[in-house]
Amino acid sequence: MMDVRTPAAAEPVGDVVAVLGEGPYWVPEDSCLFWVDIPNGLLLRTQLPSGATERTPVGAASAAFPAIGGGILTAGGNRLTLHTRQPAPGEGPVSRTIAQAPAREGIRFNDASVDPAGRVWVGSMHTGETEPVGVLYRLDPGRVLTPVVTGVTVSNGLGWSPDGSRMYYADSPMRRVDVFDYDPATGEASGRRVFADLSRADGVPDGLTVDLDGCVWVAMWGGGVLRRFTPGGQQDAVLPVPVSRPTSCAFGGADLTELYVTTASIGLTGAERAAEPLAGCLLRLRPGPSGLPSASARASIPS
Image 1 (cartoon, one colour):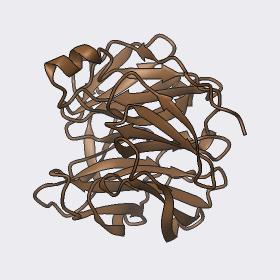
Image 2 (cartoon, helix red, strand yellow):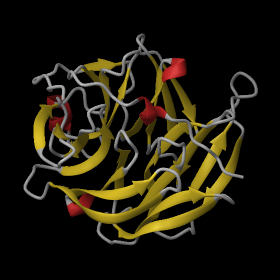
Image 3 (cartoon, rainbow, N blue to C red):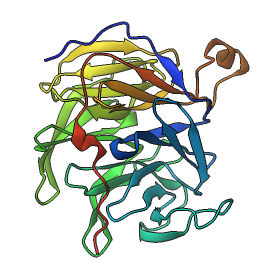
């Protein structure tokens, strides 16, 4: 198991300062990173290594992935939406709804991810972050969103072990990361149990990713760090970042050794913003371990 280099210097990538940056997703064939700015409804595509970023208004979006067969799938509001390329300069993308959950006041989609087989998972959250009324869904044949976990307050990080036999999941206010037994052939998740108890840690677990060794990296919103846990659930590294609100992380780069971290500036006071000039920026670190190629699988849209 590769050790983590601490401290690992964090550098900003590009010039975007997001209000609430989220959902980093490496696209290897295009050498770019997808991420979103949720309040501004922006899909951001950052080219590497230049850092040049294309901003595309897509409406409500909290996560985005390239889709098998072309286009970009976003999760936002209560819908999964497929966007095709812009038809002409200056025009927005052509979009169509793939699936939608029942519309409910005070509920919106939050984090989403794609398993190694391309199966789409998306969770919802209570916008007040106090009521357990959200749901974790799986997109199934017939474009049906099947509820798998109910009673969720803020559905967040999703990830899979290298062999696909485990699914990791965080409902942030519970202040823990859970693990399920996972059948990659069917997408069935069962046997939910606590993987890492973070109730005594600063901040709450937000987005997460899994590295080649099967270790789980968790961005701690309000804690200013990334925490890495071994497959046995033991914390083995804490990686400080120069912002208090890291939101998620994803490995990328040609050899998957660059760790990209999305961050937020939302809710910070003027003094806090002055103390955190990189809040809202996309950050790049090189902590040592490498990521999983399957962590950038394309989304499969069932018929």
